[in-house]
Length: 477
Image (cartoon, rainbow, N blue to C red):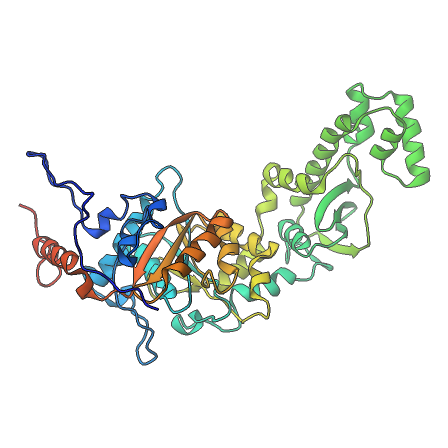
């Protein structure tokens, strides 16, 4: 059932302007949409007034985007920059910029409550608006069940987000040269593939061995590590153990094959806290040395488990520390090249698109995977985009939007004017709140221009004052 619109009437709770000498505030829909608190939505009865009083309801506009197969999607690039259609998205873009001044919004998720609300139209045109404003923009298609961007942007249907996650991140690591896969690539791929085993890098007479448990780096061995930098020597120099204790522990390690740290713990000579720092430093040193290798060969030997100092090292926490302390691990030329070659450069300056790619059998699992998280992290932190806009499926249809909201700085909900029951909108909002989605506001879409006569009248007066009939800006003075 469609909710009927009502005529525009002033609210009895709004006092008349009675401060002579001061300019009357602009109470147009575009400015008043930031004036009420979010919890007043449920207190309102009429559908249109509810959206006028949403907290930070960004870009409350009306533009007809009927999905008629006989005509293409309306595009910002096809309209004059001073047209109402373009101005609607420019206003939306501006409101997003000022939505959170302390924490700038870089990743924006565009979704809706139900299908056919025009969310993809809003996502595409918002991306074009940012691009026209000089912001380097990446539009990411995450509605993997439809994958419509391949037609809109002439993309290769075999390449896209799904192929990066399923194919690129499954690149074999068993054997090869460091020229093909850098150490940063190898460690990332082993992590995403959750492999257990040992990675060996060899060059001339030197060799480095890195052990992984479930994809997480757990220990390292450097064949030619200087004697004074080995664990026993470090502990003796710091006064933790004596030379006699070191010899005894080393003999036991040679006889049993156990790691030195575990033997020292079993002997009761040191505590885990005494060993944790030196072992971490040795792993970081091994990685730093291995990153400087040129022409090295690598091989990965799979196993059911690896030996590491379980009471000393937490591989999950260690991985976070290593990423911060060894910057070279973020250098992943193979992965960057694969991602860059999948991104489509459009005919609009500053606008790039990552299409969805082949439709996977399990879209929600793909979007909720660690591989998706890694991809978003690379796109956000490594590529030099100013804005990332994610086109997502509807909230109430599938769980994809809730999953994707974890990657976003802000979420925009598109609502079709007169075409959706507000109870469904409430349900969608509740679902987003349950996952702490950073909801910025709403876009009221497919609203007929006659519904906003007041705004259009104001808009045309504004345009005629500043612009000529040809669209050129009038000179001041």
